[in-house]
Amino acid sequence: MFRAMELVFASTNPHKLREIRELLEPLGVRVLGLDELGQRVPAPSEGAPTLEGNARIKAIAYARALGRICLSDDSGVEVDALGGAPGVSSADYAGAGGTREERDRRNREKLVGELRKLGDVQRTARLVCTLCLAEPSGRVLFESRGTLDCTVSEQERGGDGFGYDSLLYLPELDKTLAELTTEELLVRSHRGAAARLLQAWLRQQSLVGERA
Image (cartoon, rainbow, N blue to C red; front, top):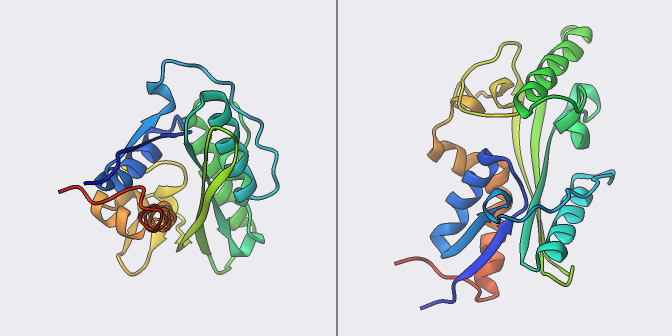
């Protein structure tokens, strides 16, 4: 037997929540999304210059406000030809207004446009996910970082992803992230890599165990 653990994933993004649940719930962790709490908490200002800093800001703020253990992430795509941009600004690369879907579309259009301006350049990139786990006192319990190497495609492919997924191409599979199955995504994704480090830490702390 093992102790059940419950945490709040401090995000309203259903795609991220689904992936985190797929990775943590087999360990017996109950993962709640912000939308399930029936409690509105103002989103903290994410002004840190790094993905790690923003993940930490969110985890601490939500853990203190909710009185629960909270897990947060901050993610971005780093394109080598653009000097690592959009990076920490990935979510609002083309501006912050509109719905999530509208922002995602504008971000993709801007990314392709910026690369076109550079002409024939290498389109190597990486997706980065940083996770932070904090307790209600605000103390950070664990942080991790996961990456996924890819290239930026000129044309969008696939309809199952979000953000930049339909542009981010994996040559070894001849697929974009938006074309991956759930199983392929969990094995390869940047969020999966960061979450597996969290899995290992939870086991080391004897906080979880495998479901029978």
